[in-house]
Image 1 (cartoon, rainbow, N blue to C red):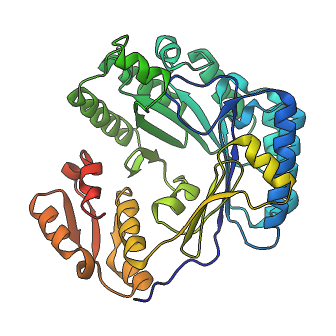
Image 2 (cartoon, rainbow, N blue to C red; image 1 turned 90 degrees about the vertical axis):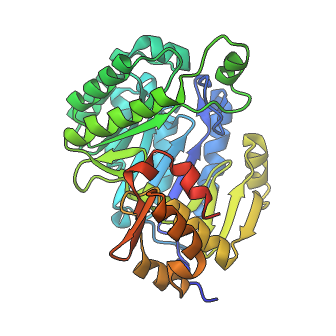
Length: 380
């Protein structure tokens, strides 16, 4: 079986694993740490970026975390300078940095602008202080609004707002209020995520000890439907399961993941997917820094995807997009039609009304959208 792979990645992810404090629901690769460790980490990260110099032409950059905006101004400038030093800025079409409203300053915003960042992802989660406190966020609702206005008045014309629904005690009215405030701010992009209870997090332990109670799934589903109705009626295109954007403001970087094409990652725990091989750096910040300092291979995981696995993952990830996947595009990448490997699943799911397969395009129906995870498991 011949598979056409995207040999050269055009997307770069950079991981900053530091936070003021861990949020109650978070299981991301992040730690609370001091200035000296951050400086050591940035030195190691610069060395890893230097090794990428000239190897690839990146069209998107995404700096995530953790909390990239936790960096002191001198540290942030060091990071941003390292990026432009080793990645040609002239090639970058979309350059995103994640920002926490509680760590943003005017000087940091000015640095982001000066170093060619053109998209901000603002981790609001909620505009209501009671919800923010439950989630363990360090900012208030007013901080979130003020951070957005600071970014806007500083010239940022492409801003995403992250929101979370399905929190313990959250009412439909609470969720509608968050959506209404977000729309009034008029960002270019809004992401809405259902709260997940990850093993070992404080929130999950509270759930197990019955300190908090999970919302009924039917309530969460109605909140999701409310988000779709509210945001699409406000002019946002529902282009991915959890994401809404104004025209031509879809996140190009994340679409690389959803279309299962190549990307490179730098930093502790960062993943890369290059020419069919998926790798990840060691998650532990101290092991990462030591390995880079000693010129060792810091990859802790690697696998070459078999053609069938690659095809399955491509279908699964592409179904996250409301446009789904084109059979023509699939054939160009894998050398055979969707039906040849997935005909049984497609026929069954079409009969159940969970997917449609029309005009050479496979995609979720509205019914399938609401149980997307279940549908996707059919293609594993």
